[in-house]
Image (cartoon, rainbow, N blue to C red; front, side, top):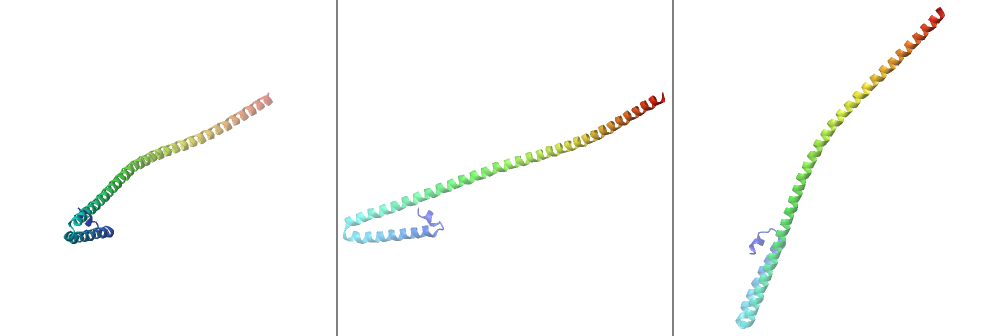
Length: 152
């Protein structure tokens, strides 16, 4: 059971495991010595040693569970980030496509506006020309009328 933690490359964990092992050995030696002289006290120390070992195992189990839960939460968060990133990339791509389409529409509208402005300018020039022609025609008509009135 403790082997699972021995493979962890962390100095503090290794030191704790070594201290536990040393303390457990000392407990065993003291128990052996006391058992020779007082069997009841030896039995009591044996129970204390087992409780100490069980408590240490529970602590290790709790730590393993905490680490596994943290790893699980971290993996879930990472997956959420990956999923969110995929969604954002799709949205980004969709928005880029929409921008391109809108740019094409804008270019078409700008061309249409330029064409309409050019057409408007041409029509205004034509109207101006026609006005000038009408004025010139009116002036000629007046001059003819004056010359006919003078000629009579």
